[in-house]
Image (cartoon, rainbow, N blue to C red; front, side, top):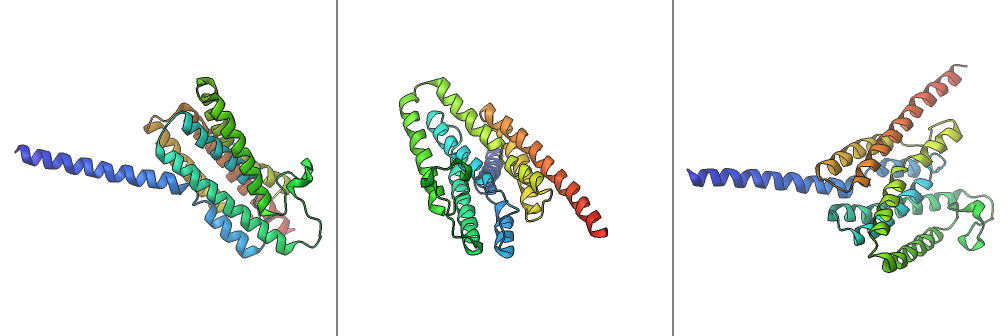
Length: 245
């Protein structure tokens, strides 16, 4: 009898272990999945106007900060791996955008990070400039973390900044849609996947009792996702009215 109970308990533990592993895998890789349809859309159309590269800026800063937050406060390894995967994904998106813009550029004017012109910040024409900026930002974070690692206030502030930037993930896309008065060129699938991922990870944060900053971040991201989807509906109706005219 005891042997049967032990076997049943082992099966339950194995099932929970498998579910935990699957949830962790989704957390690590799931954040990058929404960018697959946007990557395909840019490649197909040869146009980057519908996608805000400032989304990449927000996510690169957020995930670099999160890595240093992990150094000061070791939370789930899953979230650290997620940051590494997301940084690589953002570099892939920036590389594609630079390649497309380079092939479409008529003017010979090049905007480089070495020009120190804030008007063209994050509008550089060379992928290497984005890498240089991220490298410099990482070195600055590393130095600050080295000197203030023993300060609980600094570590918590680092975590709060990381999730604040991540919570603003959809804001550049929201603003670009507003400026364009259209969502054409933006992958709706990307936003829907954002929404699904944000709901999943917010639930993951709550269930795993992650630092409070992560739960707040997830809630804010869901609200911004909803706002972008409302833009899709509104601007879609406006485009339909224009076609009728």
